[in-house]
Amino acid sequence: MAQYKDDTVLLERDYTITKQLETDVGKRLKEIAMFTFPVPVQARLDRLMERNNEGELMPDEREELRSLVNLNELVSILKGWTQLLLRLAPTAR
Image (cartoon, rainbow, N blue to C red; front, side, top):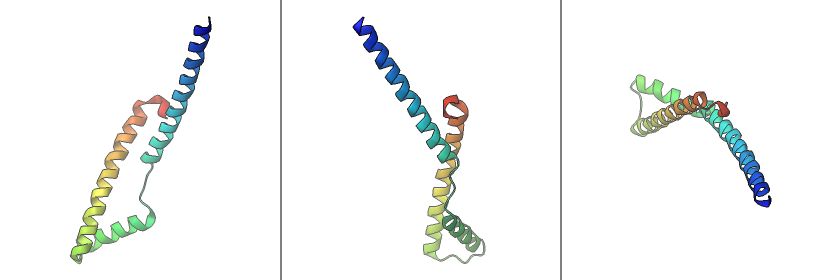
């Protein structure tokens, strides 16, 4: 009888931990899905792209633009995967 009670307590604890993890993971996934660059970073990216279109970038600005574009692409990929996970995992919603 004692083993059954111990098993029940363990299962209840595991269930509680699992539900908390699902809630925490769901919150983090939503945060990633909603992520946008801070206003100053987005403004800098926009300005660099504008200057690039006008042919006015200095070499160091070109490298900065390349880095920001790469970061933006990575964020877009992460957000896409996150949005897919949120659609597929009902407990993450």
